Image 1 (cartoon, protein in one colour):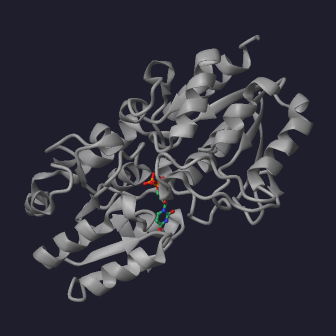
Image 2 (cartoon, helix red, strand yellow):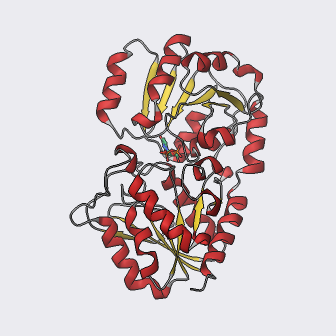
Length: 354
Ligand code: UDP
C-alpha cells in the first residue's frame, strides 16, 4: 500500500507535545516500512523522526483539545497548520491508497466525504469536545469501517462505541531492556499537564519518602510551578524529556511506574514501555491503563484519585515479579502483533468503495 499519514496539528513530531500519539506514529512508520509499504508523513514544520519521509508544513499550531472545556466551539487559528496539511493531502491524494488521520480535530472528519481517497481515522484520545463528537458521530455513521481507537474504555466515551475498532498499541521491544533489580526509586512519566495529575504521585512520594523521577515534556508551566511550590520537601527529581533509548535506561532502574490520570486515558503508552523494562505499573483503575495492568500480577489497580491507595500499593511492590511484566509486554504489546491489526484495518478501509 501507499500510505499517507497526517499527523497531529498540536506540535511537531518529536517535540513531546503530541504525547503518546508521537510514539504511535513513529511505530506505525517503522512497522509499515518493514512490511514494504510506502509511507509518507505530513506534519507541522520542525518535525523529525529517523528513517521517515516527512513533508513539513508551515502554519500555526492548534490548541490541544484537553486544554479546552467540552462546550467550546472548534477553534481554527489563522493560517492553520491543519488546514495547510489537508490542502497538501488534497493535492497528492491520487498517489496514495489510504490517508491516515491522527488529528483529534474537527477538520479532517468534516473533509472525509469531500476527498476521493479513503481516510482512516485513528482517534487518539477519549471524548473531550461536543463539536468534535458531533462531527465524528456523523462521519462514523456514513463510514463505520474508517474509525479505530486504542481501547474499549476509550471507545465507550464516544456516542458511537460500536463502530470503533480497538487496535491497542505496540512497541519495539528490542529497544527496551529488561532490568531484574531496581533501585529504591519510583517513576512518573508523561506530559506534565493537569489531566495527568502528577501532584498525586508527588504526594505519594512525599509520604513514602521514596524518590520520584519525573520524565516528560512540561506542557503547562504554571501547573508544574504550582506543584514545586506546594511540595517543597517531596523527594522528586525532574529528568527532562528523554529519547526512548535514554528513557528506558533510567526507567528500568525504578521499582514501579506511577500513573495518575485524572481523565480517561485513551491508552497510556508509558504503561507498556514500563512493563517492557520489567517495571510494575501502579495506576488509577480507569481508562486504558486499567485494561493493560493485571492487578496483583503486573502492578496494581487502585481507586481513582486515592493517594492513600497509591501508597498502599507502593508498599506491596515486592509482590510483583518483574519477569511477569516483561512477559506480558512480549505476549501482548509487540510491534508485529499491533502492526498486523493496524495493517488489516488499513486494508479494509482502502477497499471500501463509495
Ligand atoms: N515520553 C518520552 N520521553 C520522556 C517522557 C515521555 O518519549 O521523557 C513519551 C512516552 O514514550 C510516551 C509519551 O511520551 O510515548 C506519553 O504518552 P502517553 O500515551 O502515556 O500519554 P499522552 O501524552 O498521549 O496522553
